[in-house]
Length: 415
Image (cartoon, rainbow, N blue to C red; front, side):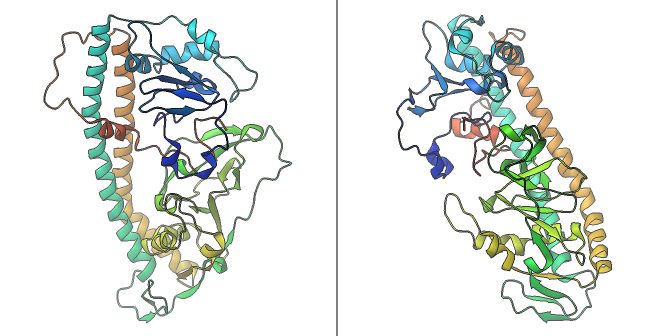
């Protein structure tokens, strides 16, 4: 169960850890049942089943009786007022283990308009989603183009430098090509320390930190606000300690190109062991290294050397052996870094603006759903137009900004 993607077939995750030895105790689900994650009810984690299957014993499977529409109820139960009510009725001592029990759920009063109005509400919201998907897709396409342009700037600067007249020499590495004659080529492990610090098993159970999983990181940026966790309740993979100046790169699902330079002072950043943490040595400008790791040549080597089809991964020992070319002085690295940042600044601003607009569009959608399913907006007289139709798989793109966490634990499922 994912808060963004709903019920996801385990086979689509490419992760053997989800395959149970026995499904005894699992709950049968029919298509169009409504499934509640009792541990996440206070976050509005309800999802309509799009196919039959078996779900965790800790989920509640709800089937409509009478005149209740599952699609209508799915939207209703995710509204802020209902999420607040579910939170009030959950039971438990520690958040993360709160549960909304079935009887308590049944005691929540439910707004239920006539069947034809429920259907009209569902149709209206799907039509609005069709427009919203197209708008978000246009913003994503723009971000993609801007990111490609930024990568071209990075690739040229970190492989050839700033002086077009400088003498070049063969690097001796087919995929690296010619490099400035005075630059140095060494294995990555000679430039950095890999995974320099980690949380131990004796870490204070009350130690609170911000956690980065694979879904938290896009190439060069964070993809979402980081979740705060206590060590006692954290996933077993929450171990890598981050410091300012580190660069992290995903060693699992490497095609996602999850790479981030840690540009903040914080003693509470912990990453999944699905990342390799690169701590630069004294001869390396930290942020320059971050751009080298983002460059197409390096990223392509990582993906080409990853093993696995659905869940490709690369060993950190292999990563450490990759040759990396660097200017020999910090001064030259810093000059190239300043050039990259100056050239990228307008692109970064445009990307940030597009991301902000996507966030605002999503907030508008959430408010619209709440207003419509609670009758604040009357849609009974609405008539669909030719642009109000979109296939189910295309509507699923509403969640494409959020990755399902498959580096060890699910974001919104039960462990």
